[in-house]
Structures are given as structure tokens and as C-alpha cells.
Amino acid sequence: MKQTIYIGADHAGFIMKESLKAKLETHGHHVEDLGAHELDPKDDYPQYAADVARAVTNHKGALGILSCGNAEGVCIAANKFDDVRAGLGFSNEAARTMRQDDNANIICIPGRIETIDDPIEIAQTFIKTPFKQAARHKRRLAQVAQFENKQVEIVPAILVQNFDLFKKRILNSGVRKLASIWQIDVLDDSMFESRSFFDAKQISKIKDLPEIELHLMALDPLPIIEEWKFNIPTLRRVIIHAEIDKPLKPILAYAKNLGLDVGLALNPETPIKIIKPLVHLLDTILIMGVHPGASGQSFLGKKILKKIKKVTKKYPNIPISVDGGINQDSVQSIINAGAQQLCVSSVIWKAKDPAKALNSLSTYDV
Image 1 (cartoon, rainbow, N blue to C red):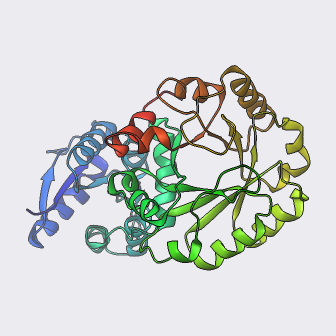
Image 2: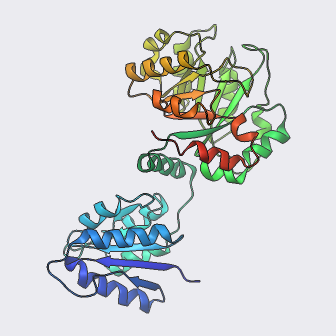
């Protein structure tokens, strides 16, 4: 079945639409014209942008082309719809990169402003270029989706004792489609009486790893960070506990110099004043909702919610993550308190369908 191209334009883009439609059909493309179907100098672009936007989002794999005088109006209107990624097509390079990097599904070509390249070539480039699927682009698009759908980021966490179970979880295809980054819990029996599997060399044998953050529940995190940085190209962020018995500032600075994002984790009893001298180094703050060391614990309730609110108010420009005790009963109150990222483990991995369980947590109101 041929890919469908939905096309629309107002009076200022009408001639451009007609020309593009005819040439694309000549090149064998299946084009659905959603109007305007006749030149009307008094028509308005938003209705055509809306029609194309709805058609593209309702038909998986479809693409759209819009035109108005400067292409800006239809672009702005189309981007008001969830799951639409519309961009201005003023050159072949713009068309190529918006598809390759941004997975754009609608291109907007001006009807009254001359483009750098021929409009039909621009449209053809847009249609023929696939999304590159690079991890960094997926991550950024997931962040955009959070804006439009008003969703918090749900991060699946892995805390297991052997490689086989680690591999089974991280290769779960349903969860992989939903999560832009995964958290690996690292317990080495130094901070808490528990150990987890986190052998970077063995894990590096798994093909196509997602982007990863390490939650380092270890007194000496640097050797672990270095081993993962050397072996795992998709390592993006490391989170270090505030309670370690080593100076925090040089460790955080060292991790940043390795090109990593860094976060600070606070146990339930740890006061938030520890954040202040380190705030300039932090990309995230992780607040523990349970005492670390084991999955499946109950959320500690009001005192943690109060802590989340205080940190959110004091450091509004730093994303707040919460880890531990997150489930259907606690998730809304945690979001209401200000959490922007939720790290979840037992609530998804104990479910019959982990992907469905994870997705259900992302539907709560921000």
C-alpha cells in the first residue's frame, strides 16, 4: 500500500498546492487533497492546517504538505495538534533534516515567497527521507511529546541480580517504545545491604542499548562511572547519593567533564540544604520516596511530598525526579507535588504487561 500524502492550502498557497499535487502524482505518489478545492481570496488557512494535521495523526505513516503565503501560518496552526511535527520547507536541506532528525510529518512550503530550491524537489526530499532513529533524536522528541501531552517522563528502572533477567527487561520491546531513557540501579553492598547486577562489560554485549542513567547507590561511585563510560556509549546521566562519605563537588564535576549529565539523590531523611553548594553542577535532583535497597516498598507519603514541593519551589529550573513507591495510588500526588520524572520498577515489572503498566502511569494530569 502506497504512502498517503495529505495536502492542503488557503488562497495564498492554492497555486503552489495545485502544482505540487500534480507533480507528485506524476511521480507516483498517492495524494489526498483536503482543500481548498477552488481559489477563494477570503478563505482562512487554519481550517486547512487542521484538516491535514488530523489526517496525518489519524493515519499511521502518512505525511502532510501545507501551503499559505509565507508557510508560517499553517505551520503554527498544524503544530497546535498533538503528535504533529510541522516544519518550514524552504530548501532541500531543511526538508531532509526535519525528517531525518526531527521525524517531521508535515512540511509547510510558502506560496508567495521564493524558496532556495525548487518546491517539488523540496517536497520529494521530505517524502523520501526516513527518520534516522538516532537515540539523541528519540530522546528529544520524547521531551517534546511531554510538552504537548502534558505528561511526566516515566523512566523504567532495572534492579536485578543476574544478566539474564537484566537482558530480558532491557530488551522488552513494548517498554522500549515508550521510554526514552532507562535507569540502572547500582547497589554494591557498600551503602546498603544489597547488591544488584551492573557489569558494564557484559551489558555492553547487548546490541542497541537505549540511553541510560545510573542510580549509584555506592560509596565509591567513580570507578563504576568510568567503567560504564568506557563500555556503554549510550550512558547519558549519573546520579550520585548525597550521603556518600566523599566530597561531592569534585565527583560531580569529574562526571560532567566526562560529558555526562549529573544528578544528586537524597534519601528520605537527608535535608535539602545539602543541594545549595552543588546546585550549579546539577542537571537533576532525585528524591527517594522509600529507603533505598529493595524494590516494591510503599511510598513514604506526606513527608516526601512536602520535600518535593520545597525542592521544586527552591530550585524551579532543575528537573525533579522521584524514585520509590510509585504506583497507581501514589502517582498523582507525586506529580501534583512537582515531580517531572518518575523512576518505576516493581509496578511495571510485576505487571502482566509491563508496557501497559508504564503507559498507564503517564496518563495522569500534570
